[in-house]
Length: 185
Image (cartoon, rainbow, N blue to C red; front, side, top):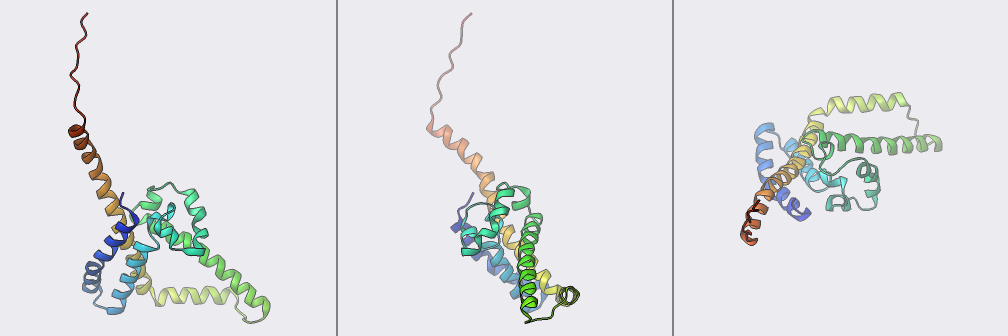
């Protein structure tokens, strides 16, 4: 499995391809920028290695504690952390739960202090309208996150598939074979 630095380099080196492909598909500079930001986030901060004590995990700084339950529940390289599409969906849903929890606490506190008068219905309506109005941007962000994670999955898969072949050939070269002795009966 490549190191965190190698994954970072792969993400950075792949960025020009993502820019070209995203612009070719969207024909929109803003959507391309969102896909690219999602790609960098997915490769550097929001990637599959949040299930272990990794470079990605450390980049969360003092907020890394929110990933402890995630790390505790998922086995490293399981389909729920390293699986294409499902791994990104699980991370997005998990992070969304934390964002929702913090938002609800903040809104409740602000309502209690009298600084706002938000109702749950207002919140639901505004959230629904925002998702409907900006769905292309949300989709571009999700595609970028998945592409960033996909670069990680792909490099892990390539290195893992090449390692057994490399070990077998190196073992044959370094370890001389002992002649088999025949047992006589």
